[in-house]
Image 1 (cartoon, one colour):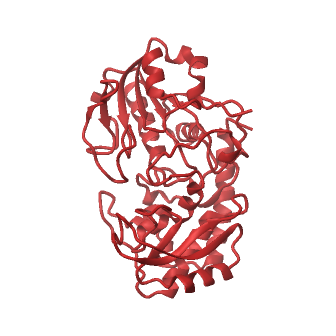
Image 2 (cartoon, rainbow, N blue to C red):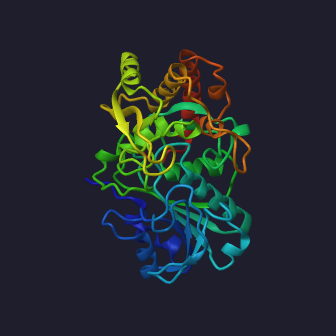
Image 3 (cartoon, rainbow, N blue to C red):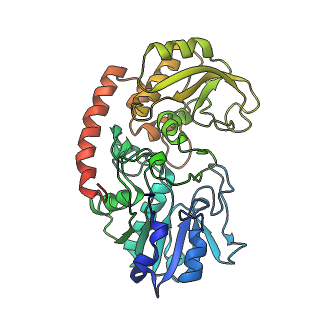
Amino acid sequence: MSVQIGADRLDAFSNVLKDRRIGLVTNHGGLNSKFESTIDLLNSRYNLVKLFGAEHGVRGHLQAGVHVEDYIDEKTKLPVVSLYGKSEKFTKEMLDDIDIIAVDLQDIGSRFWTFTYTMAYAMQACKAHGKTCVVFDKPNPINGVDVEGNILNMEFASFVGLYPITNRHGMTMGECAKLFNEEYGIGCDLEVITMSGYKRSMSFEDTGLSWVLPSPNIPTYETCYTYVANVIFEGTNLSEGRGTNKPFSNVGAPWVDGDKLADYMNSKKLPGVHYRSHYFTPTFSKHTGELCSGVEVHVLDNKAFKPVISGITLLYSIRDMFKEFDFNAPHGQYQLSSIDRLTGNSYIKEGKYDLKELAEIFEKESAEFKKTKEKYHLYE
């Protein structure tokens, strides 16, 4: 039987939604399993009064990092308040005319994913202003069992890591909401519209659902695995594949020797993955219009693949092999380098530990986090 996601089950939770003024945080991926928009479903059945746009906008028409002003949605004529422009957070004025902030966003199982913290900010605002937060749950596409990586050091908290969770967290969006609410003290009035038929051992291909890209740079559910591995290259002078047809699977730069790198990585015999020497030319982002050499990361077995240690191994290998490698300088509101924000600590940039020591840290901290997150499981 196919999984029914939260947006399929709105009427089963009508007691939560009816006679309430609803503001919806969503994007183009806010659909039920029949490809019906959550915007249209709420607009036709309940009292939807406002839309909130996270990164990439309500209709998914914006690239990463593009800010947008508030506007009127052309289809529904509802006001759209941008949460990725002047402010990532909700203000009292945004919420004066609503009772519920509903959230329908696709998580991809990674600490770095900004949609998760847009939800957290919605929850914080609900607590501050006496509103209810309703989360429409969806599957974790890289399963709800496997946990990997280090726990974020809160000195490095940012919009790509707001709470002390691991790189790969093994939770659904609704479970993240419960964890943030209870473990990390948000304490809002929270309702999760749960799924039916979902087992936490499922990867996305097991659910019977169709993938709708939640971001222009996550075109397939397979990309979720390489994203967890290789998004850290955003903090370096290498292309992480943005502007190519394989974002987060292509990693390289004009000065990398792809053959040498692929041979070295494959000699490591990392489980579930193969590194293929590859040339690519990004059409935007880093190294736009430049021929880059590097590797394409092929995940052969997503159950065996360990994305976090694989990504760090690739980064350390490039650092050691090519003198041109560098980390990006700090920028923006956090005054932290992007590699420190992404890795949730400074020891990767500092090279404080070798790979064996890092693997031991990851194993210890992921086991610790696994015990914490199990308290908030909604599914077997």
